[in-house]
Length: 211
Image (cartoon, rainbow, N blue to C red; front, side):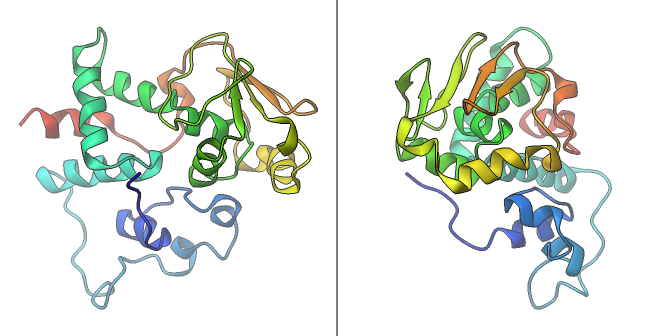
């Protein structure tokens, strides 16, 4: 399975904003964006300010969303093609499909402090959906689905610490509920645009793919 393996903090610095790729570290003073808020590379200090319009801005917005949800180019393009065929607003459809990914849901429930760690839980077979093991990170959840940990992971200290500190990372969104004692979450509704607090302008992505 292809995935990005280089330094994650470089991605945040390249986009000029926190993408919350390192879990709890992103909320501390040690965050790279806090310490070095300029693009990575030898000439990062002297790089020209980003443009405020045009193709470059649209491209950066697409790259930002790809990096937030940890998907690669072809997969992201497939999501957009599906969103474009659905009823409703294409940009919002795209974000809602990304929000419903199993790795994102595990992260949003607080079982993992970052989406990369949530992906690891899923691929290693530690996550159950409706009592059945699911190891496909892109599997979409539906209303009524129950997401839980397998028995051997319910006493894992990293998971327990992550769930205990979820409020410091923004809490559980309204479309999910978490039973912290049972380490189990439920999808009570489909996500809405207002459930995504990240600074995303999805219309720029629609404009990019419409060229």
